[in-house]
Amino acid sequence: MNKNGPIIVIEDDMDDQELMAEVFEELGYKNEILFFGDGELALDHLVNNHVEPFIVFSDINMPKLNGMELREKIHNNEDLNLKCTPYLFFSTSNEQQHIIDAYSKSVQGFFVKPRTYDDLRKTLKTIVEYWKTCVSPNYVK
Image 1: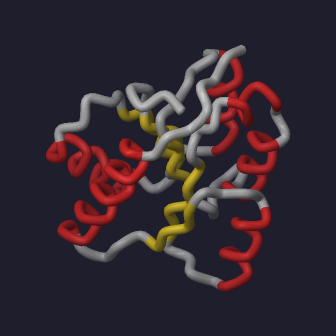
Image 2 (image 1 turned 90 degrees about the vertical axis):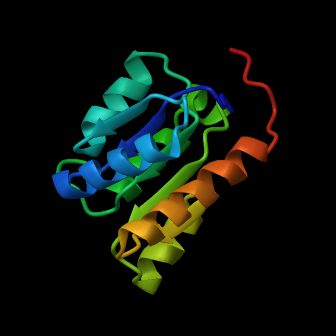
């Protein structure tokens, strides 16, 4: 896990992107924040730019390639899977079937998007601080 790598946010709702950008700026993390509006764009970036992200936050319901499909493609890609990048679902959905499907694809977390700015800030801070202190095997290609 590259703790200094970019934080990838895959979210098709521009309002949610703006809120998350504002929160990350307020929290002052040095990681670059990269936003993608759909799963295809994110996958293309991850595969073709040899990026080693710190964390991936993914919505579920997105056009072209939804979050579940994207997770499966990343999980089945040996190079991407070996990077030990935490893949978290960050969705408005709390449907039990979505949660079951997510964990069956070996996600590292499923979070329901908070409704208030303060709760969003607390949640994102908790997630990032947790992964900043977590250890993982060193990725060597």
